[in-house]
Length: 260
Image 1 (tube, helix red, strand yellow):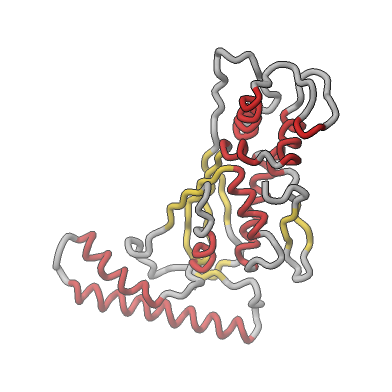
Image 2 (cartoon, one colour):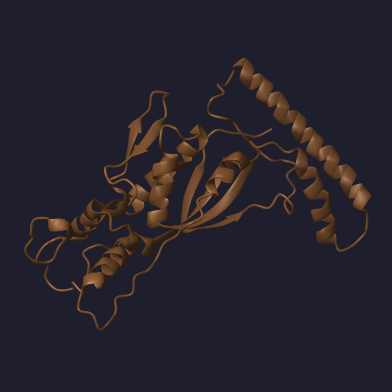
């Protein structure tokens, strides 16, 4: 039986920014998400020439403001709508069905495509160990035994339902009918995979909410992994979000620019 202890986050798409030929402007960033966010902010005020100052009464900066400074000011004044134009897609693996039940509640700014237990044979499914359960403990032994029992039950039920369905209907539908019945015995800790597309504002909200100390530990661990990915991808948008040690030995996400 496969036991999974950490989520896996893989960046699978990013944008390409195409500069409009009729607008004489270039950003100093090469990250499309950062560029489109800056462009959207400048379009609001048609501020494509030299900057006379930053929004919100900040001190004037001679010449053209850098992308980092511009987006830093966007975060400071909470002009978060321009961040909705920056989009990334992540492949998330090694998480539980319990986690994705929480994840898909983040509807605004997100799109989800999740592994189908109705279509996929889960006879060799993995199980995500709850972070609160320590290896070698009595709780761990109880949890492993329960997972093994449900896996045996799934396999037995799948075999029985396959025999019951028999040759009635197309092969694909027969498999679905058997698997949709057998999946009923799988627990919340059953491992799943999900593709998530979100704009920068939605990702920030997810990480701030689910990375807090009051969040479920498994989804907090995912929020931390997503933040590490986005730090590498677009530091000018996500660099103000920090990972800090938590009393339970994990980390939390904190930012001085809340709810942007």
